[in-house]
Length: 217
DNA sequence: CTCCCGATAT
DNA sequence: ATATCAGGAG
Image 1 (cartoon, rainbow, N blue to C red):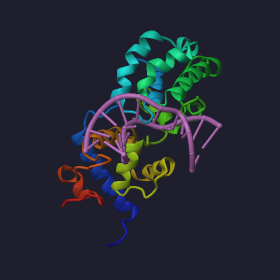
Image 2: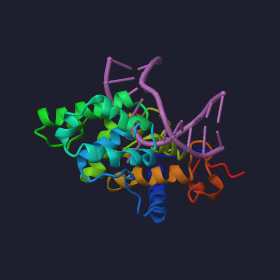
Image 3: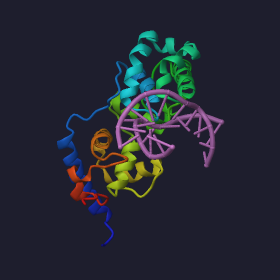
């Protein structure tokens, strides 16, 4: 079997994206938030934790801390208690408080609209920054590569890399720019329901004929 | 590279 | 018992 050319891979990607849009027309961020700062907090909490779990702690969290100033002045112990069930709570509490202080002290209370600035915030890496740009501002400087996007892109043969940065670079050459934001949301939905980490449901997957990793036994 | 870390499904 | 969940910092 000959190696797939970049052009052929792009064509296959267009077909895959078309099918994904048909199947997941309403794919979007599943974190609950009412402001870009709430989105920032929720996204920090979502590290190695399901969005569903995050959405269970944020109502009480956003009730207690209503403004960026409130988060900047938060008692770390109280903050930890409120986010405890999302895991990594010492890191996340520190990141939430420190990033709020940075937003006030270094960004005049505004959450940056550039990835380069966003990743200066404590607890905000490339992935979290891209989520804030996409879901918060509708902007895309890159493609969000989380665990689902990385896993499925690998299975689809869009990358051979494991590192999220390299996966993103590979995807940016293949996926049309206008689809960058939707691509991540649709793959996350697909990863939760069909192309699961442990027991992917290849037999019932509408992409199985376009997927080199599909097991149709 | 290691560490941070609880909830859930299998 | 173990793998996995919208990762980031040192």
